[in-house]
Image (cartoon, rainbow, N blue to C red; front, side, top):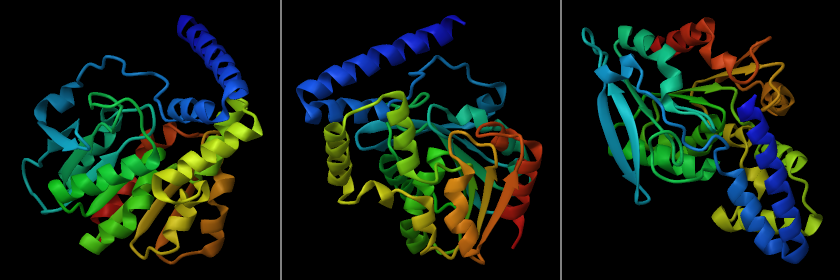
Length: 290
């Protein structure tokens, strides 16, 4: 209850701050709003290392002058020579994906997990999908050409944005998208519902986003990215996902790409879906086949 009240108070504070800033300078308000949009709302809570992770090799990767911390798990018996990267979602951390580790190890995979920029034990304060995509590409180049990537939420969008470059480096890859943040336009629209801004400020935010990569907001789209990808993709999405609505997935569903298998679940929402045992089982089967 105390945490919920503090969150309500924080939302009210930032809503007032942005509205006042917007009245004075839409450009300044846009910078503040975008930074808030990209900042994990839980901050960096102290996390106890789960017992499973104490048996892993601790890793550090320097990317954009920031230290990113993660783990490498190596199978004790058979090693199939293939490596898997797991990418968590926004306001999350790699510890939450422990259900995947043992099943993958049993199939002979090496498993790598990192806290994204501004998350968990990694350096930084904020994250957006292009930053995450660039990190994934860098980790792949520095450590290993991952044969498979499992990614949730913003990690799914980031992986999709990185796919073409990853496939240029190594064509033989598989991707598992767990309730990906399918359309950035939806994510920003949800932000505006919580923090209403005038049109002038929204225009400045669009200009700010365009300045990052010379692409409009609509470019940050899983649907768009998959149009040019032929690698095998397994996509899980729940029909009741309130954070990344399944309606955003319709363009890909309707396209019926032969390389994309979409599994629609019911009652798992945005977060339970990746913890669901059947999701883990089907993911490991998909990565093991072929």
